[in-house]
Image (cartoon, rainbow, N blue to C red; front, side):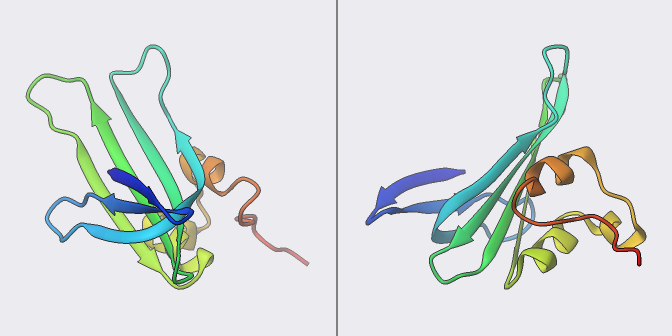
Amino acid sequence: MEKEKKNGFENICVRRDGKRDLSFSGKTLSWATTWTDRASRWMEATLYETKAGKYVISVRNITLWQDEENGYEGYVAKTLEDVFMKAFPEIKNGEVSWLAKELADGIIDLSERIE
């Protein structure tokens, strides 16, 4: 992921494996990681809002294992809810990963509504 500041917004490029990268002007809303000091594999996720008002989530799968490569994913949508559903499809089944919860903290409510 590359960043370059311009006019209060950053020019951001989100890398994606097997797809075209996502380039946009925007700002970072949230960042989360599963990294611990004993980790040899972990995930990092960043939530952005574009200058045009769309939302982007970048997910990086990091590995220190020999013969493994890092993985890169990027998702874009018009709403926060939609971009979270694309990046973390398990939400549709009522499951929410720790990474998704941390990324959403204070930004969007991922709780299940019961009445």
